[in-house]
Amino acid sequence: MQKIKEELMAKFTAVFGPGGQVIPYFAPGRVNLIGEHTDYNGGHVFPCALTIGTYAIARKNTSRNLRLYSVNFEELGVIEVSLEDLSYAKEDDWANYPKGVVWAFAERGMKVDAGLDILYFGNIPNSSGLSSSASLEVVTAYILKQTFGFDTSLIDISLISQYAENKFIGVNCGIMDQFAIAMGKKDHAIFLDTSNLEYEYAPIQLEGAKIVIACSNKKRGLGDSKYNERRSECETALEELKKVVSIESLGELSEEQFEQYKDAIGDDVRRKRAKHAVYENQRTIKAVDALKANDIETFGKLMNASHVSLRDDYEVTGIELDTLVEASWEQDGVIGSRMTGAGFGGCTVSIVKDEAVDAFIKNVSDLYLQKIGYKADFYVVEIGNGPTVL
Ligand code: GLA
Image 1 (tube, rainbow, N blue to C red):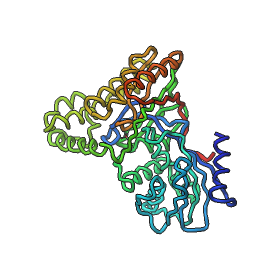
Image 2: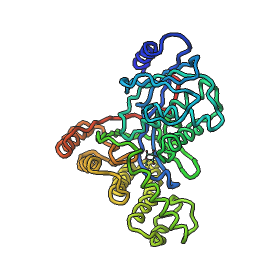
Image 3: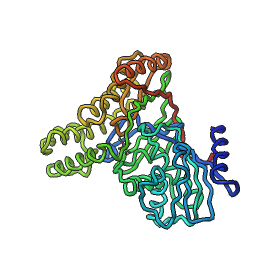
Image 4: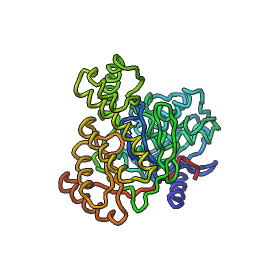
């Protein structure tokens, strides 16, 4: 971290020039262990922050402009936007994310009254489903809080970032990613009830096992995916269910209640979507109970069941993620494996026994290349903290 920080500080001076008070920041990416597509259905999620994420070096400038530069998109150069015109602009590309966060603060009455120079560098693979965009939003929100002294908690930061994503970027995401990143805690996953934002940290002590992420390298962007479509399918199913049972969200239903009322949903596809939302929420609750009881085997089985449901009922996996997960299930020493994040490409998360990790990576990598025709990338990850000044 120290080395990256020094290199980025030097790069900042090269891009923006010397002087002023230059401060380095970091916000993590996240991986969700279980509880997928439940966060906009009033259900539970169980994500954790990673030690990879987004670095940002920031300084106030004397203009009324944001000058934004990403080491990941050097060809785009410095993107300069005026604080007087914070509207979405296609040509601003990735810089719409930080711009959206500044806009979202202003919407909450927290107006940024000076320009900023910010240099970003992310070591989360882009479009991998490890929340590079939420990480970029949260690090920007954290910079604004620190620089302008805004009175915002970390939970506010997650809500403001989600607001930017929903209303500025136009992706109707739930709260999971921004919350997991803003509230990240080393060696802990966050058991979050998205219906009321009550949360609990659960220690992840995987004795003799590691979390391995496999990145399919099938690019996806939430904006052009079927994410918003799934969300509205669930909303319609909820409206149909409300005619026969008094609920505010799918997350309120047990499996038995769902089976009792499901015929109120007038379409097979919507019934499958709602079934996933209900059963996945219950699986997440059971998984956290299993983990607390030190029953990692049950936790792994629930991860596997989560993937099957995302594949067959929610239909957000696709050949790349299915190939990775199905190859993972065949390997020795694999406790559980599933897709993670929105789906439609992106990553899988597996829990693998220490001694099996090398063979796991080699075998799954070979099987994937053979079937899909391009490589997957593997990361043995650690669980890290939320946003910080470095
Ligand atoms: C994306 C969204 C989250 C969540 C997941 C699916 O990561 O940003 O809010 O809905 O997909 O669980």
